[in-house]
Length: 305
Image (cartoon, rainbow, N blue to C red):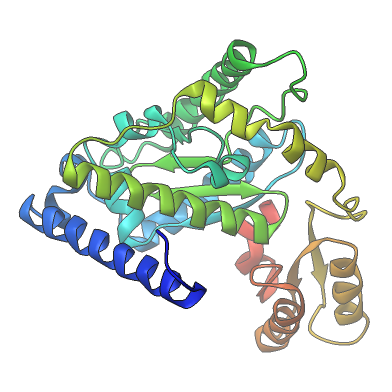
């Protein structure tokens, strides 16, 4: 829109956005609202404790699978909105069609990996098999996408592993070079889901054409910006466990490692002192950079990473 000054233009933009949002929500409600979203539910979410149990069992293995070229750090999201999407009848169609916001491609890639697993059966071995098969096919699809769309001056193909994985009953796992980036990746895909929800409420969601998406993802100027980024620190992308991190030398070691780029699991006999160290780290370096627990048994899932 246009206006005579910046303030008018700004407020007109907000007004148009609010009108569009109200129109979408009216259509969404008329079509049945949350229960009917994305074609309605195909699966039911697992109970929170069961989700935590399965995530703890698969995440160390899954992180290894997607980190074959470079290590990744994950973020798990299993709130009501993302569960509504991954459990829906239309999730396979919508995820396969790809995303539509150009700003997000460098984080989310053109599409996520959707794993067609029945959570009500709860078969962990079957989930791992489907993840393994899905990852292999995703890498092949990504290589084919690159080969089909590349130009003579395109940058080399980047890591073909997915950065967003969706599992019915469980939620979403997003990956990035560190906790901050994986969290942003998750936030970006949430935006994609909201875009799909709005489009489906009005008519049908349509993603960007593959060639247009590729030209954004592999834009030469974007590649130049990535190459100018500072080199990663020595312990970047790693998860380090510090025993006795609640005080003294252990606490200082935890702080020293995080300065070198590590993500820290603070372990101590006293849970409150380990937690204090982790909170001090997250206050300085960001949410999720440090986590805590008391004793090896309580920290097993984190140590597994």
